[in-house]
Image (cartoon, rainbow, N blue to C red; front, side, top):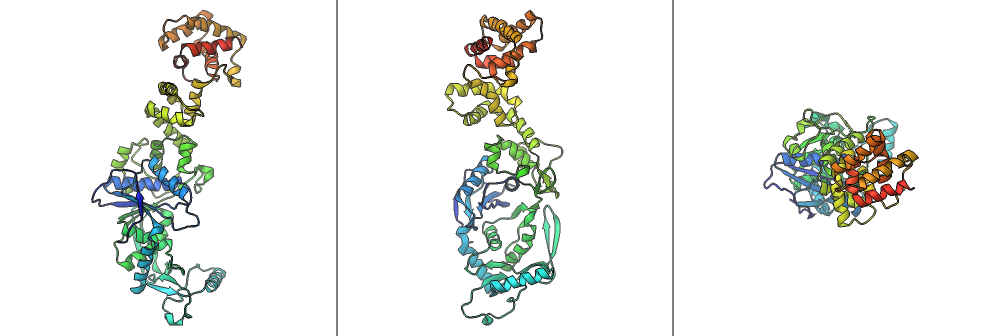
Length: 481
């Protein structure tokens, strides 16, 4: 086996002597998108379900487009989703000499050959095939031609010698039995004229050297599997088990794009305020199911996941469903954790006292929020400075009559010996009874005065969280405004 170029990975539950080995192999040309995250999740779950290993390979052979920030973004997103990989990260570009070694072995064994066709010849071939409405593929002109026919010192590429007769069938774990006539396979390039390996060769060599037993990836790679098998069989290597997952579409059935919400995983975290467990759960249900279960914990997912549950049809991404699921996980999340997450989103440095206030506010705030952004917006009233600038809708609630109610409420609240929700509720209800009106007719102007908005958590919880001095001060500001 060739040497593996690696960096250290985050700690994870590595299984010794695993039988099943899966891998996720992103190209670092941008962020980790939703489709890639789901592929990583399925590979992670399959390995964990079978007590195997989940490996990570960065396919950075495209040197013009691969960037270090993209690598860091991918690793960060993987860790955030809890998809910790086993062992170390493999970098494909660093293994170029090993890839070339395999190409030369195939060449020596007669499973590959040198092609001296010039760029001009290949362009003319494509144009003639296009004009004749034929499939555009290399015609094998150097497949059986002696090298002595080539000009001395002429550049060449190394091509695989694909089978031409019969058919190849893959027993795909998702797609079922898929057969391709070997005549449709092309003699693709293994080594370019500068000696660098192609992606099609590198993938196969790396999977073999990493001991990958199951290749789980998008079904846009299904055709590549037949081509890659020619390398595997030429080397006499064990064939992996394939599982090609249908792609993700938008709600309109079209291929998922930015207009459907196809942004990077980091944007779901940073811009949309989604929790990692919610995104994991949602991605799991995109193309895989377990009866009617919608909310599935990580432990249940590991226990239940298998490829038999993956459907053959494309799944549809729905941001609203993701937010609904995220709301569930927000309500289940620990208050300390949510307070810490919100503190990172506020536009000022949060003091220990303010952090404690956030924590105490979570039970009142989180049932009303679908994401961390909404949670942060609903918590903003806690830290507003007096006198509050009211939203137009809140300002409309403060009429001359409602200001008189505020004065009455202020008097009753100020007279309280204790400041707890039970006492607060009694004082506000008494204000309504004295005025002969419903509780809501007092609560609404109080809400406007206390938060500057028309909507908020329950008014008694708001009073309790703000405390006596702040609450009375905010109410007094609006009585005289």
